[in-house]
Figure 1 (cartoon, rainbow, N blue to C red):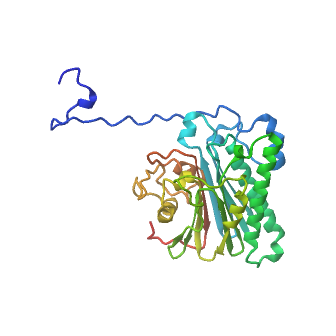
Figure 2 (tube, rainbow, N blue to C red):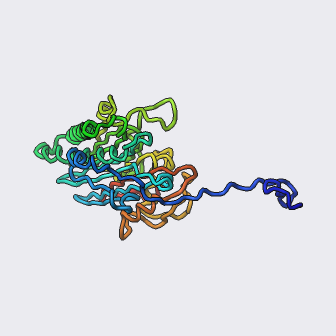
Length: 345
């Protein structure tokens, strides 16, 4: 072979030309180059979402964040991690997640800001913060009607309406178009022995029951193209879609409930099939580096029982799958007294 032979012409041991594999992408981690919230909007943000924690001056929070809580036999864990593409570009994480506890219940939310919306990171954070706090307040005020089966549903509708109103008010205060704050929203709440869910946009939820069954009660409306989202908050018509999606069910036999943005749903598609193996990984660890969904694990130890479950879940969210580089947010809600069958994977 002469020195002029190209790499594409390099023969294999049988003398046939072999095309070399393309180089793996070189990913960098770059801090966001612009403020998370412009300084001139700070007072407006405080007005519509008081107490919202901001990642403005904290690079670790900008890259990933999470929280956990436990009460009345339920454990909640949520983490949100900036995707490799946003980290490489120096963009902000556009996902958000939140969990809150209260007497006789909890609420949780995840959201994925639309990539085409300039300030969707604010939209996702406002939506999850306001929705969960409004649900909590609605259920607190309804404690006298604790046995009312419709109570979680009414509270979720109230939370969704509050989130939509907050986004619209923020847009008005800041002189933004509603499309600048577009976000999906997936909210769950428990009150007593009832659990409710509602959703607008993409993302996934799954109930995992004690008998090993997995159900996916909600999904975004069907559209002409895969990955296309029909509705975002706070667009016209989105709040109606969100409220109409409401599902309420008995929680007695629920071992776990998973809420995920599409950065987790897409690599684990179809989610109904793979939600069980995903939860088993979090609960018991990973025996093989590549899952049935073709996901390569980055954290093989159990997450739920880790000394620091929040950090463990953030590390778990660094899993790899070709072409999947979006922000990822996952909320795992467990009923401690209800076991997930050991043989499920």
